[in-house]
Amino acid sequence: MTLTAVREQRNTQQEQADELTTLCKALADGLRLEILRLLRVSSFGVLEICRILDIRQSALSHHLKILATAGLASTRREGNTIFYRRPLLTADDPHYEFKKSAFDAIDKIALGEARIASLNLVQQERSEQSLQFFTRFSDKFREKQGLIAEHSQYMTGLLDLLRELELNAQHRVMEVGPGQGELLAVLAQQFDEVIALDNALEMLNLAKETVQEQGLDNVHFIHGDTHKALELQVRCDLVLFDMVLHHLPSPHEAFQHAHSLLNDQGKLLIVDLSRHDQDWVRESCGDLWLGFDVDDMNEWAEQAGLQAAQTVYLGLRNGFQIQMCVFQKQ
Image (tube, rainbow, N blue to C red):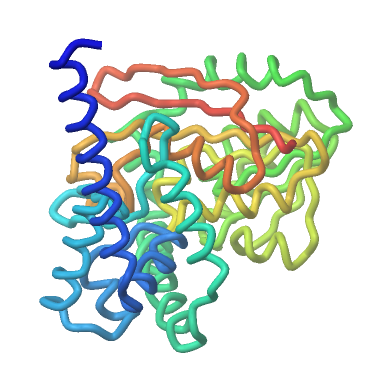
């Protein structure tokens, strides 16, 4: 080994030692550990974290900066708001094992009851924001949806993907957030038993009208979200979210709930937008999130005990990209 190579190796080792020191210092604070426990649940804006942890914004910003510098927190811009989350850990990170062990240890300590109550309130407000949009604009749903993507633009690809899943008529299927019921009616023609789940009663009634107009009577309608389906102990072979994930207050929770709702070897199908920066969809279409990176969804799936099986991408003329992702219960 040349002298130059030896020096470079020593510099690399010193850099890694310095990074490890920064990591240890970042973890040596009770409030920062509580922040990391919270960020496991979802992504949060600064003001949301302030409310949940009852802390001043200036103090929180200081702690978030320390965590970000240490590589223990990452940011994602959603329009004008910066959301903080735990980073996706990759095997090429020299401190991968250390960070993973630290997160595992942190997650064994539950959030206190007061924190959980504040967290639930924030999640409920997000959910109400989305619910109010669909309640107000149920009569203009197709018009609003058409601003991003009409069903006709990707329905053929979606049906092709469904056929590749090799499901038979006896498999039970649930669509979460069926909109006006176009896809729901197609599913009801292919499967003996279909469940429609929606927390917006107005939208659920529209889907019911669509199904009834086609003379189909094998759809069971449930008013509520996946919490309601879990309460009713619903079990399915396929759970489908068609352009719904970006309306949910906590997208990663959909994967966890799907795991509980699926039978063995059951499949989760997510159809949603790839990550984009068109912030106008928040007000015009009621979106809470500006699409998703497939790496994020794969991470959420892995955490929930689901295995990524297949991903299909479809570009749209208006600059959006749709991704259709299949996950299977292991």
